[in-house]
Length: 456
Image (cartoon, rainbow, N blue to C red; front, top):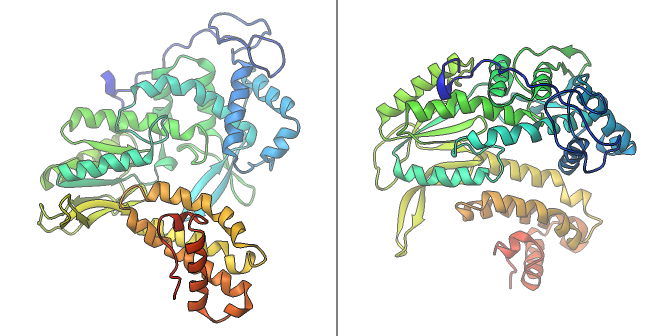
């Protein structure tokens, strides 16, 4: 990232003259646009429109989120909404805004490890959203089309669809895994990337402060941060995208123009025509990331053979996971109704396990035994609809089969609620089946044809 040209991160540009905030001291629309040059009417160092702060708050409110180190929830923040938003605007406009520490929350991982998440305060999320709303229009036009993560108009399903198509065209895939990416991001390189795209002085100032904001551990102690950006921060995904745009995307286009890729944040796959080309790509990426102070995971990064009926070769790895889908050889049917083996995505084992765990955690048979079946439907349908909209996009039947666990949980609810069905598992299933036959649209998965057996 220290090279020259389109791939390099140039040195910091000369900052423009500080602007100021215009308009009345109220958080209302119509506060004017940023102006560069001289002090403002209200004497602030930087021109940050109050309307921008208000719009940032609206986005934070829509995303909800937990409280930060100050313990202030979104509801508590809104008790003095005008005063809290004015405080954010006043400090940011004056250059005196210093981000509070980030509350560390560790999320258990399937492999026994923990994923650290940094939870900013509500006020800090508003401030970060202000910065994101200014920086994103500057960098979004330069991002590569094969970068999908956290970008307007792009989604993970778009990346999965393109990956499926390219797996049919290319025989080999490099499944990349960056080791502890968000924890090892180089601050200097991030700041140089930001400076390459904006001269707004307050934006560069506060991004530097956010990168260095300490982390508060569960015991209350503060841990300084010299590298990385917290997963959970509002602006972190944008900074990560900007970093990898130079560290990976642009470099790949120049170095391996014949090897297309899909990247969603720090998760990426590269398509190659031969095994030798894939091996060369892995080693080159490893060296490139070392230059950018990143490291490929030694065991999770691997080369995969896209095996199907037209590619009958053998290799130790013939499947990989990407964005909640497992790509592997699967049975498919052609237009003439004949079956064949194709390389296709379907809901991953890890995602299916998470769905089953969520259904178990609902504890329908105990927590919901005093409710009606319609109440259960209103509770579970939005979640199930979300699962089907995402995991049911490709190889839908596989996702539908996972939802059989939901009917098992509903049958357990029947046995708990009605005494006549106690210890009568088959009878409880048949009762549900008759309800499904009479009201097929009550549950989302019943609408898809996955219904309990009604018996005779």
